[in-house]
Image 1 (cartoon, helix red, strand yellow):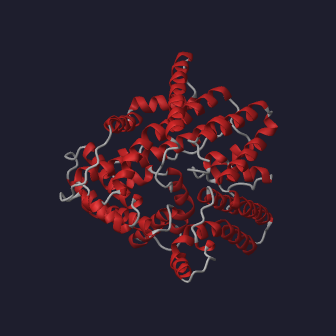
Image 2 (image 1 turned 135 degrees about the vertical axis):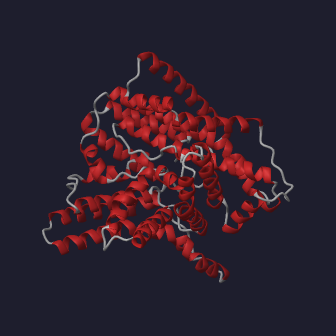
Image 3 (image 1 turned 90 degrees about the vertical axis):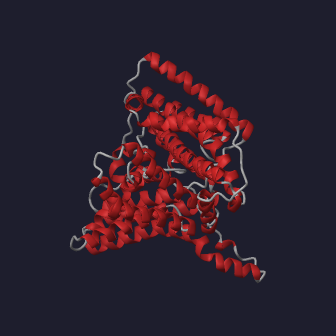
Length: 478
């Protein structure tokens, strides 16, 4: 079950909100946990038992670690809890990639015992793994006290709004919310959450999905014979599809959290207006970058003496770990290597060019340059293989292809709407409106106008999903 499905929008979510509103404050956490487990059962029932067992083990190991006074004992328990948390993630990320040769050999030998060689991806495994690690480390560092109730810990890890696309929530920054959620201005908070949720739904259904259909056509053809114009349109459609898919799911998760009284950390900061590739990575998947900084970059930087070589090594290690988050496949490795090459080029060469032309390079030129690099990188992410990606990139820069895919009448309008949406979100007026919505500082008239608009958008999305099915989104590894 995904957020943009009829089952979730018309059955699961209304039932949850109804029970959440009717029951008193003491029972609301139980409602959240119960519906989160139901959501998990719907999406990945065979993994729920293992996830619950590992979660319970980590909870009691951390409590035991916090009560221990022996440094060695505490370190052993920390390592054990981290091993339990990461074991399933590493197995799920690497199983399919590294056991494909074994699987093919067994199939050729007509052996049917190959179920264990398939890629296993429990729902939300990356997000609650990183959250569990942050919980163990924060308690080990004495920065936070362990949670007193198992129910609170399970809610923290399995909260259903975050299972599909995050964000990651370091325990140190959200421990207080787990004990007491924001109950002030509850109606304004729920309205703000509703606006954010519908906005995210519209991004996925009305923007990402139509562009994704064209991108799928472009990447499914014989790309060696694809015309350059069609290849460029396909790459542009893919870039906006990924942008609004991630942005949409992030908005929906944040909106659901606001309706429950939680404030999720910012996870998406207008990355397509970045003026450098390093700036793009700071804006893309913000919660992942912050997690890497808190729990990987800072500890590594504190080891040994500081030097330029060590700084580059640490930065490369953290970037490699960040890339590995998106999957253990050759496509992802190629995508990471592509970005790594341009990051190094930017640090060694491009920044010097910017310094030389201090007043001669407009901001727009930098933004378009970064967008072009990022868009080319998405080809590796989307293609079926590295060879397929290289063939597609070749079609972008050669004029020998003859196969042309004509976009429908709505393609140009949707593309322009995407660009306008990005620019509006980056503009001062767009940021001001977002701040007012987030803080609930709106007049009754503005609330009425926005409510009417969101209801119309919601109806349009339901109609499109009902007639065309759940939008096909690029494999979600964000």
